[in-house]
Image (cartoon, rainbow over all chains, first blue to last red; front, side):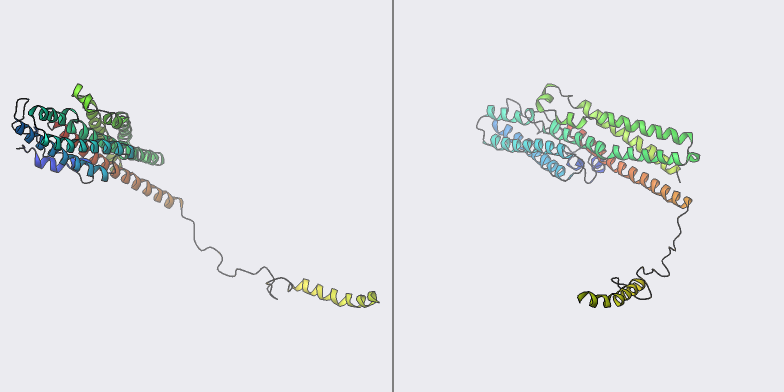
Length: 237
Length: 99
């Protein structure tokens, strides 16, 4: 049975139209209880394999649907993400059928392990897709809009020097600096995240950690820049 | 013979041509009394007045401020979506993916 985690918090965090709706918010933290081992019976492994593949197929179908409808991802990154997720989906369906048809525990155990080590649907496929979507959302919309707003504010300041206080000037400088930081942190981020493979994850489970941190930091910068812009705008009545 | 007959016609034809030229009636679309230039008549003068500098500046300022607001609105929306996706990435990564 799956353990339900933080339902309300996760639901509140999701935004319509983003890929977030594809998040496995109700996902289990394990794939079956008890988790089979190399010494489990064929039926136990088959049962766990059916559950693990079914859960991933559901998550992948949801994710693919969101990717198809999102405007956040660039067209190139969308094609890459869909290629990965559809390949994972096909792989899960193949493994689901194969494990169900396996006649020995040894073969079933090998196939069961393949669900994880060969695909890493959650740890790589979906996670890298979300990181890329976040990065593309920043580089494609948020950052250009912040840059445009800063230019307009500068133009207004130049036309009305009497309204420019040192505090407003400092906020504009901070807005521009934070936006520049966001640009730096998102540069090449989506491509880097999407380049991670299950094999790379198998070799280093922290392979997406830096990309995830960069997305978080860039988002924090973009939010801070937007706050600066709001404060300036409020002062320019 | 031909030359004497033609000579009799020269004076009346030349007179008629002079009249046509002076009155302008020989021009296409021309009307006696109005000439060929026509007139736009009354009301052709513009009645609008140019906007003052202050009014123009005010409109430009308003447009700039509106533009700032719109840009910030768009940035906030994109930031919210990016935040949701980043959170979803965290959740996916936290999901068990080990045999």
